[in-house]
Each structure stands twice: as structure tokens, then as C-alpha cells.
Image (cartoon, rainbow, N blue to C red; front, side):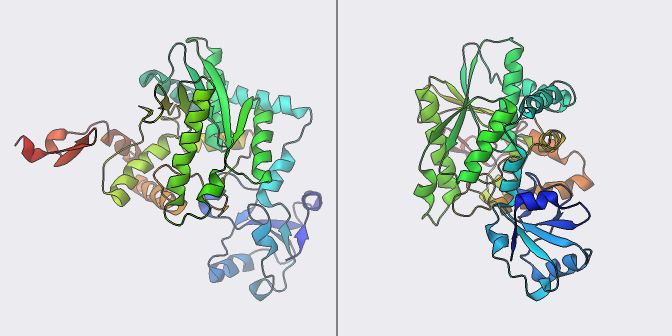
Length: 380
């Protein structure tokens, strides 16, 4: 398929083309080109039907993550007769082109911060502060390594930390830590550009994690996530930090609870904080524990921000590497299940969350405490 450069694409009038996003659904949640339509090419028959409904006189501009997949698309078959193009650089190239070194960087930063202080104060800052207070996540004298993966969650978390530090209710220090596990140049540039636009002074260090897991066939995401955390703990401790902060939000928590039961055969949750087993004196905290993903997306879109959606070196299609080794497809399946249950019961999300706050051990057949299994017959 012939390519169209970002410059040529930007010169097209809105009535001249239709942008078509072929990425998977969970990746699209991190952002799309404005007015683009989502059409998966995995099911050719469905794709053909959707494309047939598009205006025949318009150019079709296909894009993926980096422009590699769309460049190799066969524009014969059901695409024959259409004026088709592959967007050079893909979505990542488009995003990077929107973040420039011009004078509007200061305005972008001010708008993002103002929206946290005003428009999204109730949805974002209040639950962030509530989690910090409820679970005592920030304490006097802390030095916290705010771990930034480059996605919407960790970038927002960094801004919320900056905001709560301005309130000066507790004296603590922040280090904004970015680990490059082997990003391609586009992803690395995107993280650095977003950090600059948002006024986040990041400390970047490199590792070879992607190369290390590149040949692993069984549970590469699990190994990748565990290695990432180890590197982050180690670097944070080296920098004098006593805590690392990760950007898991409320939706991550309830999805983890449900996935543990459906796929793991166990009842567990993603804890708001925990002590490191291998790094003495270090803690992990999750200050977005009460923040809803939909509100994070709303803040992102309001500020016209575009973040890294993929860190994976060898697939370039998966979303965040989850610590339980689950794939994006399982996450998305669970997310859709919760959404469908919510249509019948609007309280289903809060009930899932509360289920791990209201465990009645008198009605549990068996449970584990510090690795030791206890059975109800032990005290029957």
C-alpha cells in the first residue's frame, strides 16, 4: 500500500479522507486520531462490510501503531477500487508530530494543571488524595519514586503528585522515574515529549529487559513485569527513595479481583501498598486506587494529550505488561464482562471492590496467611 506522510496527511481537508484505525480495541482506548473510525482487519468479511459503507469518493488513510502493518497491507481484494494510503509513522508518529518545542508547551502544562485543580478536581485529585490519606501512602520524610511508563495513568499520577506536594500538608520528595527497557525510538521520543509538555522532570535509566524476554515463550508478560519492578526498586533505592508509586487505578483493581476468580481460581486483590520482599525498607504504593479509568481518559482527551499505549518490544500490540501475566485480551474480556453486568446492576463495580473488604472468614473453606494454608476443619 502506498504511503502518505504526516505532512501530506495534515494538508488534506476533513472532507477529503477517512482515517481508519486498525489497532486492537484496548490499544485504541489510549487514544485515536480525531474522527477516525475503528475497523479491525482480523475479520475480513466484517471489515469489507464496514468499508463498503464509507463514502466512495474519499481517500482511505489506514494507520496502526508505527505504520509498519498498514504499509504492508494488500490494497487489492476488497480494497480494490478504493484510494488507499498507509499513514507513515502510524499513530505514534502522529502523536509525536503534535508535541513540538514551541511556545505553546507552557500553555499546555498550565491547562493540564488547571484542569486537575478545577474541572477534574472531584474526579481525579479528590480520590487521589483520599487514597493517600485512607491507606497512609504518603508519610513525613518520604522520598517517592513516581514510576512513569509513558501511559495515561502514570503521567496523570505524576501530575497529581506534583499537585498534592503543592498543598504542603506533609514534607516529602519526589523523583519521576522512567525506565527504558528497550523502547523503539518512537516510544522513547513520545515519553520524553509528553514529560516536557506536562512539566514533569523525568529521570531516565535504561535496561535490557525487552531483549531478555524476547525469546521467552511461556508467560513473557509476567517475567517482563517482574523484571521491570525489580529494576525500578533497585534504581529507586539507589536514588535514596523509600517508596515506588505505580499507576494502577480502580478499574485495574476490580478487574484483577474478578480475573483472579475466573482465571486463577483464587480470591485476591491488588493491594494499595505493600512491603518489598527483596528490597529491604522499600514499599510499593498505588495512589490512583480510587480513580476511575474513564475519568483519566476524559482528562486526557480534554487536554488533547496522547500517550504511549504499547511498551512491548516484540509484539507492539499488547497494552501494559500486567504483573499477573495476563494478556490484554483477557483484560479486555473482563472489562467487557463488568460493563455488561453493570447494565443490569449499576452497583456491580463497587460491589466487586467491597467484596475484598468484607471477607467473612467464618464462611470461607480455606485461606492463606503468610503462605500458610488454613482450613475451616482446623477449628471446626
